[in-house]
Image 1: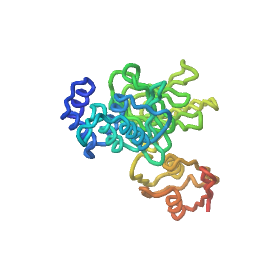
Image 2: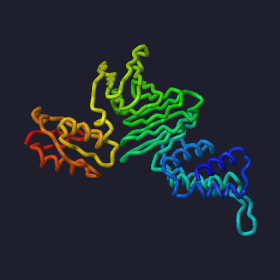
Image 3: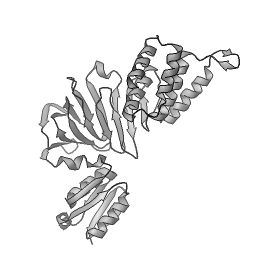
Image 4: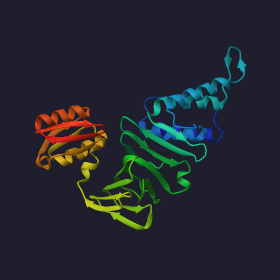
Length: 326
């Protein structure tokens, strides 16, 4: 089905598609059997092909309503009791159904800068880039790239946190995240770059990456698997650490299992999973270990369980959780 859609879409782009092929393409785009990854790639392609713009950040439901209204105003001449659908209208109708099925992402195509931007809010989201690279966005994160991606280097801008699995194409892949630039060719790595801070934390799982300081282009740090580079632009800190990389990718798992997990490492995972920060008031708590499983429990439910198993109590102060010994 994917090959057929690609063929029909190319026929449409080249103005050589027949009426029956248009109807077939419109129908195929609305089938629920397509994988979310393929839908995501096709969604971006279709939006760019049709020059569908939005002047700000609006969700796909609103985009659907806007396009639908436009179609209603531009219907073709009547033929008996029906209507003659122009090719552009028919393919747009397919796009409407496709958009509704594609994803819960927010998509922005900037009028001036021609930027495609993906947003995640209360859930993790998967993005498949045009080169086949996969990006898992953590909650409250967004990823952007220019539509002329392949005509330039493969540049993306990240705000928040994401796990990258980059395809090797021979062309550099560059992540701009706060003050850091991360250059790779094909590898797996996690980037943590909170929107309201000048920190970028790059953790390498597989392959090799180079991290540049955006304010000092002469400074470059090359990471090996198991290493993490922290660039704190505000504090002027540059740190290269050996870490347990599994801890920095656990946030994306449906189920997170802890086996004799040190208390400090447990809190690190919870911070990424629930987008909070912890302040531990008693250093002796770091001597404790935890065994357990997290699925879809809320943070409060998880902390209540930990409180029953370990001698701790917690209080909430906005997005910060205060942990004390009980």
